[in-house]
Image: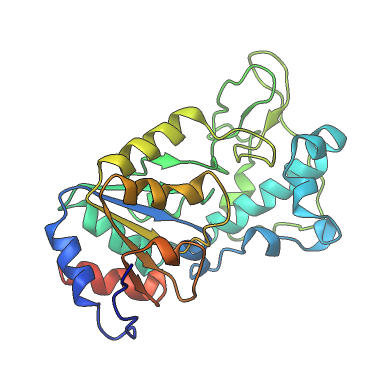
Length: 267
């Protein structure tokens, strides 16, 4: 397999520009690197205070929830506050701009809402969302505008969020069960509807951009291979080599916030 030359960030590699101009159906797959430049801590870095001595897998698991739901809810609530106090970066804004004049679907591993706040429509949050909590018993979606769910204080920059806070989860208004975080935990299946939407979009795409994902968390990491087998051009945008690199037709060693605005400006 031949790869295009890995060029520096001051110019978009011409084969990538050509592929983007020619494509009629584009899918952008995004991972943690997409949000890193907005200051969002990566999953393993999102530990401080009360949670610094815990393995994230203990906090993000059904077992952790059963063992100490107050601890887990507090951690996710703190993470939601960090996201709400961050802003979309130039990469998020570029994808939103691209969606205005092309068929661009977004499937993301990220549990934040930065794509949406940049103005994008997201086809699939395949790992769930911090902002879609639901009942652990009956599955009903919690109403985010209910102040008892995440708490209005996470939306207010003037109110400090304590990283040492255990917070009892709210009760479901329908069945009385505990409202749980909307992120997918270790050992859980992906949300079926989101996964099928992502997979179907990739199968139908001419061009798939893989942005800021290391390609190690399956089944999301398998989507670039699905794209290739379906005949799409696969482009990786990442400052470092990843597990995705070998299956990409073109690799551009830059970040989302630098590369995506340069690319979209050429279209």
